[in-house]
Amino acid sequence: MGSLVDWKDAKIHIGSHVVHYASGVFEGARCYDTVRGSACFRLDAHIRRLFDSARIYRMDPRTTSKRSPARSSISSR
Image (cartoon, rainbow, N blue to C red; front, side, top):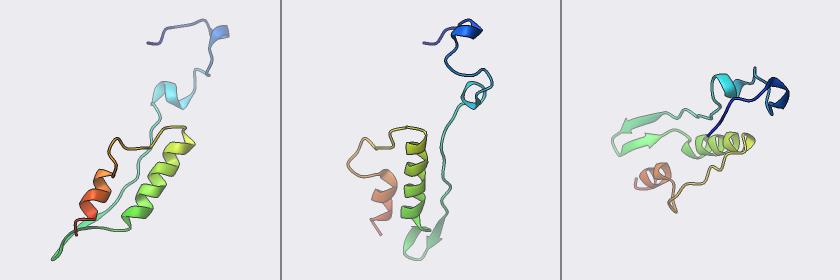
C-alpha cells in the first residue's frame, strides 16, 4: 500500500499522469453479426496492438489460459 512522502523523497513527479488518472491500455475492435455467426474485424491486429501497448507500459499482457478468450470465440466459426 502507498503512503505520503515528503516532496524531496518522491520517486515520481506529482504531475505524473499515473498519479491523477491511472495508466492503462485499450484497443477497440468491431464485431458484426453475420449469417455464419459473430465476426470480429481484424481481431489479430487489434490484439497485437493491445499487447504491444501493454508492453510499452511494462505490463505483462499474458492471459492465464492457454488461449485468449477472444481467440477462442473467434476460432469456433
